[in-house]
Image 1 (cartoon, helix red, strand yellow):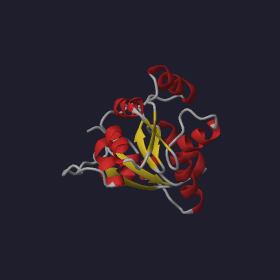
Image 2 (tube, helix red, strand yellow):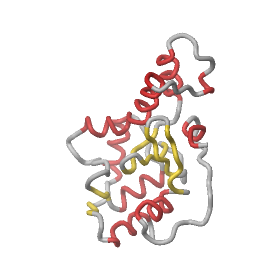
Image 3 (cartoon, helix red, strand yellow):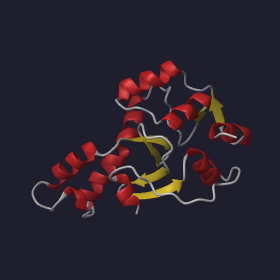
Image 4 (tube, rainbow, N blue to C red):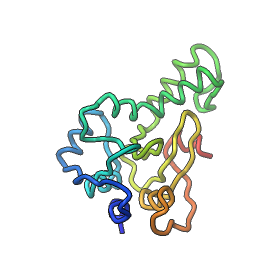
Length: 173
């Protein structure tokens, strides 16, 4: 069973009709990213709704923008308030926030899946990451495995994977 089918079969979630190819393409154009193929397939099969799920069809575009910018804004908060620094940005000299912001601009964009769970834009089959400020954890080997683990549906994969997305995977190690 696919991730969307598992969620629907559980009866614990309201699943709206899947996003059409046109809706997905319009979202990608509006927010300037590309869904990973598995994320696109998941949302096309049926769109989970309710608390924690992004409302991709909703009128509250500010909420979607906030969910899309939350990973970057969270890291910038930790740079400013919690002395976080990523060694890949070089020495801690000058305007630390400007340096961090520039480094984050080249990191792959993270796309909200559920609450603080994210998938990288455009990268297929990537592990689901939980991102809260600079705290990054791997929550599933892929989207299907994540549904098993996050919601206790079905049987999770018996494999460990390491995220490979630049910057974010370094925080998960």
